[in-house]
Image 1 (cartoon, rainbow, N blue to C red):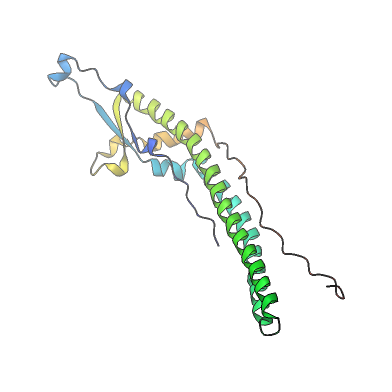
Image 2: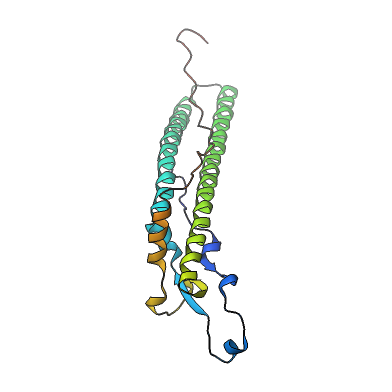
Amino acid sequence: MAVRRAVRLGAGVLCLLLPSLVAAQTPAAKQGEASTVIVVVDANRVQRESQAGKTVAAERERYQQAFNGEFETARKNLQAAEQDLARQRSTLPAEVFQEKVRALNARIAEFQRQYQGAVRALDKSTAFASNELQKIVVSVTSEVASEAGAGLVLHKQQVFLHDERMDITSVVIERLNKRLNTVPFPVPDVQKPAAPPEPAPKGKK
C-alpha cells in the first residue's frame, strides 16, 4: 500500500512574469527600436536535476518507505485477524461472533484513518519543502533572466516552438546548485498504526 507520490513545484514557477524587468513603453519602444527579451525555463527539469530538488524527492521517499513498512505490517495483522475470525464463525455463538466482527471493523476503520493521516502528513511536509525550493528557484530564475536582459520568463512546456538559445534552464540549475544543496523537510507528524492486541494467557478468559 504505497503512500502517494507527488513532488511538484508550485504554479508560481510555471509561468513567471517579471514586471520589474519589462522594458518601459517609451516612444522609441513603440516604434520598434526596442523589444522585450523572452527566455524559457523548464521548471520540471530544475526539480529533477537540481541537487535541492533531488533532496526533496529523496526525503519523501525515505519517509514513504518507512511508513509503508509500518502500515504493511498493520495491514497483514488485520488480514490475519479477519481470516481467523472467519474460521471461528461456525463455532462461536452468533452474538459473540457479531461482537468480534464489530471490534475488527473498528480496528480496520482506525487503520484507514491513520493511513489517510499519514498520507496527508507526508503531503504537507512535501508541500512545505517544495514551496521553500520554489522561492529559491524564482529568485535564481529572476537573477538569470535579469542578467540576460529578459523581461518575460515562460515555462518551457507552455511554449510550442522556441530558439534553444532562449532556454536558461541549465544556467538556473547550475546557479541553484551553487546556492544550496537542500531545503528544510519537516518530519511528517504521523500517528503510527496501533499494535495488534496481545493474546490472553492460556487458562484465562
